[in-house]
Image (tube, rainbow, N blue to C red; front, side, top):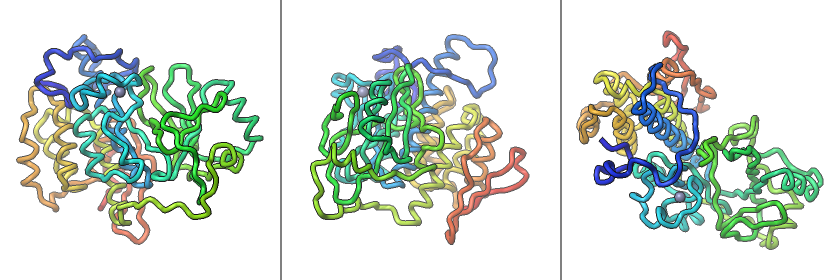
Length: 386
Ligand SMILES: [Zn+2]
């Protein structure tokens, strides 16, 4: 059976990805101590799928913040030629470029359905961000000591606390600093990063990979401690940066990008993100035995009965080599009811039993219906309702 994202047509011949595989630690959650070459290949694919699932979860989270997210090619380019022949032939930056057309996402946010469809087509995608007014964000790219020194000099130390990440480069020097575009400010359009001495500045026309994407060197893009968008909001670009890189004030407030989500949708999206993160931490063996497989589907259905979630359950089920049958998930999905007794709390509990993962925070929607209390490891206390 081909791994998800590869068609049967290609499964036989595309044994090796087009580019070198990222060097990454594949920690198997199956508990197998011995490792044969076949296990290693399976571990690699499971790790790539887990990477893709966490990128999808974060993409939905970033979208909820009003960021125009993009689906970037996987760092090993495996399967990319099947979703975009042109990309497969022309891309020279594996892991960093959108594999789908993305011009329109400089102007509007993708829908949740569009994001889910990208990962359905290529489940191992990295996650990216279209910069500029659509996301309200610009990026300064700082790579190496000389760039950091230049930043210190031209800023005069005026560097507000704002989300900042480390790229997965092997030498550990890559940094991405995100700033909010101040009202009325128009930054230079930069189809490629605008090089200013040792610094690179990116605004409308450019995009960037975001955590938790995988770099082709093998590392993960990571938010610096205390600098994720959960920790700090985007700080407005400081005055010196506006003077240096903007084309002048328009004298008008920039139009707020339209966020299609209502409050309710945003809350629901948060629950979906939590469910998908939990799913990526489940022991793959849950997909091979009938009851755990079915119960996982029922819990996902309770979280979100949409076709998008069905696609995700179907993708997850494909890791059960020899057991997966196309159409099985769809047939079962149609029989699930809203009061099946399983839900997000069960997914969280199973994920905590299967892995070291602990949900980052308790989710409470003040005045809303959704309250999630993280269950304890034995699953005897707490629960969730949505
Ligand atoms: Zn590529």
